[in-house]
Structure formats: structure tokens, C-alpha cells
Image (cartoon, rainbow over the protein chains, first blue to last red):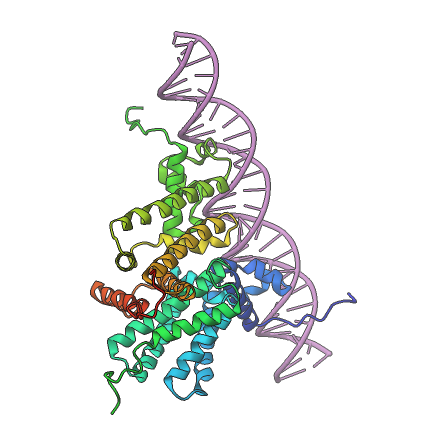
Length: 202
Length: 202
DNA sequence: CCGTATCAATACGCCAGCGTATGGAGGCTC
DNA sequence: GAGCCTCCATACGCTGGCGTATTGATACGG
């Protein structure tokens, strides 16, 4: 042919990347070999040169996701010094991502699958642990920190769930309203942080 | 035959009920005619005497769900008089149902489907509106009420999402810990309710 | 420059589920 | 008790996806 278009040969990583994209965009059932092959401009025949079966592909995609979900947020907060500032930027980021990113929700929804559950569990637990540590650094007791971290995390999950599944259902019309909401939540989560009968480090 | 077992003939309602059960237990894909027929002890041939197709069945199941989701919670709170007590029992009920009831989450997760979205949206918006009215009755301003209602609702969604998808991932080991958590959340949601610079009705 | 390992293409069998067609069997009405 | 209406059963074709087999192309190293 003349227009061979020089398609570069695909690697296992290409497949994993496409699988992760599909998983984030449309859930576990979208990680289907034949549709992915079409998307990648090839046929499923070549897939089995890279992976044994669909499960292996899902595993690879999840590995990618776990890496990125662990590395990314750490770096982003290194800049901030005190725990309150870190919490604030964390919440602001969450508010900004609202409704933009269905991947979190689609992957969490896939946790019914044996392969997905442990990965999602690890990522979520790391986040919650980090939140707990933030509240403890702020000066709250252990149990109070656990409670506020749980509230923060579940509110985040519920927020992205609502905004991706039912866009516009929450009474947060625009970005302004969302920002105000985030501020409000931050205030509530920090309620009592300035009281002096908290356990201090000295 | 001798052991005809006298199976009663099925009605459209029986199918809708079974469909709703499957939807709540395992999501939209579980609302499949042939498996449901097996579950009901019949064959799919009889299904098409009641409904035109699968979509119609899904619609019927959702109608059932919407009715129950709207009637139930209203009655349950009529007993309580003041809004704070209503909020408290609401949260306690939520905490008690934790991890027991995957249906909310499975139905919400099905809102990607055109047929499901409007129903779920209506139910959710009614709840949020009710929460907002509670906070306004307590004495908060409109925007403050919107914020706290949104926080309460999203925290609830996130809580049941986490407990059904990833049981044990939240740092709420047992029922006691969950009760304590709910108390904490209630306290945070009501922070400032006793201040006198709130807008009062007199 | 040739051979081999890797990727690609096609065809095949398999399974699950939807929707249709066609008979059969039971109950209700008159 | 005859007839009809409703529900049940089975068979069929269709779609979409998985996994396998076989063959073809192509890049890369010796």
C-alpha cells in the first residue's frame, strides 16, 4: 500500500494505558479487548501477544492507576508547610476536579471485582491515613482525627459520585458556589482547631 | 405430572419486584431477563407477555424504587418534632444502615443509563431539599443550610459507597465506632446552631 | 542479509443475553 | 362445557465479547 501510515507497533504498556483510560471513562465492562483493539487501530489477535487474558490487562491497568494515585498527591502538597494549609489545598483541588474526572468513581465502582478491590482498598486507606495524620498534626485527638478524616473522605467520594453520575443535581450551580462550599466544609472540619484545650505537641 | 407443585402464575408486578431486587443487589446489568426467569422459576418466554422489552422492566422497577424512596423517609420522621431531633434520627438511621444496603449505591451507579438518571436525580434532589429545609428550620442562613445539607448528603453517599464497595476500609471497626462517628458528624453539622446571631424566626 | 522473535490479521468455536415465533396449557366467562 | 385470554415453554436467529489457532508481515540481531 501507499498510505501504510506507518502505524508504530504496540507494546504491552500501550494496551495497559488504553485499558486504564477505558476503565476510568466507562468502568470495568469497558475494558473489553475487541473495542480496545479498534480504538488502538489494531485487532484483538495482537492483544494475546502481550497479555494472557483480559484479567491480566485489568491488573496491569490497575497497577498503573495505583502508582499514579500514590505518587501524585504526595508531591503536590510538599510545597505547603503546615497541616492546615495542606488540608486547604487538598480540599481546593478536590473542589476544582469536581465533575471533571469520572475515573475515581468508575474505578471505585469496579471494586466488586476481586482483582480491583485490593488495589482500590490500598489507595483509599492510604488517603484516609494521610488525612488522619493531617488532623492529628493540627492538634486533634486520635478519635477526633479519625472522625474528621472519615467525614472529609466520604464527603469527597460522595461529591465526585454525585457530580459525575448526576451532574447538576447538587445545589452547587457554578464554580463560585463550589468554592464557597469547599470553604464552608473546611471551616467545619477545622471547627475547634483553635481551641487551646486540644492536645498540643509541647 | 404428579408433582406440578402448583406454581402460581406470575404477574407484571412480580417481575418488577424481582428486577428491583436484582438492580439493588448487583446493579443494572443484573436486571437480565433470562437469569430473572430462572430465579422466578419460569422461562423468559413468559416475560414478554408482561413487558415489551428489558427497558420497560427497568422502568417498572425504578418506579417501584422511587415510590418507596419517597414515601418511607417522610413517615419515619413525622414522630420527631424539632428539626434537630429529625436530623439526629436521620443520621442515626444512616449509620445503622451502613454496609447493609447496597441498593442505594448500585442504583446510583446505574444513573449513567438514560432511563435511570432522571429517577435517581429526583430522589436525590428531594432528599437534599429536605436536608436544606431542616438546616433552615434550625436557624441557619440559606447558603449555610445549602452547604451543610450538601455536606451531609455527600458524606452519606460516600459512607455507603465505601462500606458497600470496600467493607472494612474505613476506620470504623464496629457498630460502636460508627455510632461515635455519627455523633461527631452531627456535632460538626450543628456547629454554631446555638449561636444567637443566626437568623431567627422572630 | 537472513533468520527468528514479535506483533498483526483473520477465522473459528464458545457463551450469555435479547427479542421473536410458535405451540401448549391453564383458568375465567358465558 | 366451549372458547378465549393469559401465561408458560421451547426453539431460533442475532449481537457482542472471550479465547485459540493459523498464517502473514516486519523489525532486529548475528
